[in-house]
Amino acid sequence: MNRPLALFLLLAFCLSWVCYFFLLNGKAPQQIALLAGWGPGMAAVLTSLIYSKPLKQLGLALQKPSYLLAGYFLPLLYAIPVYAAIWLFGIAGLNNGFEANYLKLFTLGHLLPVVAAIGEELGWRGFLYPKLTQKNGRFMAALLTGLIISVWHFPAVIAAVYQGPPTWYVLSCYTLTVISLSFLSAWLRDRSGSTWPGVLLQASHHFYISNFLNQLTNPSLNSAYVYGEFGIGLSIATFVIASLLWLKHEKTLPTIKQYSMA
Image 1 (cartoon, rainbow, N blue to C red):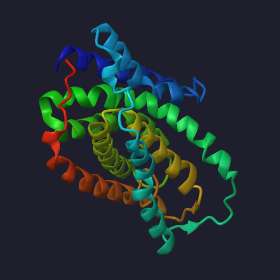
Image 2 (cartoon, rainbow, N blue to C red):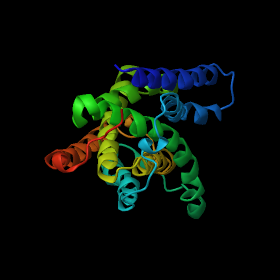
Image 3 (tube, rainbow, N blue to C red):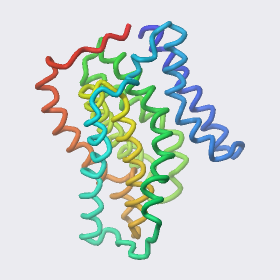
């Protein structure tokens, strides 16, 4: 492991896990979760500055805006079938009493997830994925990035498991989902040459699942095993979509410019 990569990982985990420690011990306000999410982004910027690398290598340029739409709508492609199935087959009920100001929900409700996603994507797809691609190739880089992100999230995930499925089940489903999302984000990064489509993918994923579809769902006794970010339904759906896109992606890899971060 080269020094810039080692420094990035050290900073990303330390900056975020220190925030998690104080947050989970009740010694900090909930807002510090946003700062924890920005750990990878701050680590990427600091590492780039320390090693005199231009920040533009983090994928800040918006080169192919059409991929912003792909990032925004991909979560709907894999999430809606899962929730439609659990409502249709009675695994969980449809919450007909859900009321919201939809204009506010779909505008301001997206704002916080976008801000949080910028902090993560600058680190994971702006710095880490291109670095790993240099020596490991795109497939292994996407896989390793997903595994690293999963472990990085583990403290928050474990703290969120109060009841329902056992911790091993939650971590397994969550890890598969995150790895699948890593391949989707890598696909967007390769195709667009930018981190911004990945930002919209992550933000839309969290918004549509946590702030919208979960709110439209009345959970039953065992439905937590299937739906939500810790359920098997979303794990399977993201895996299928990521596999289909990546299989086609690999056939055109020779036409995609290799990352050149030193």
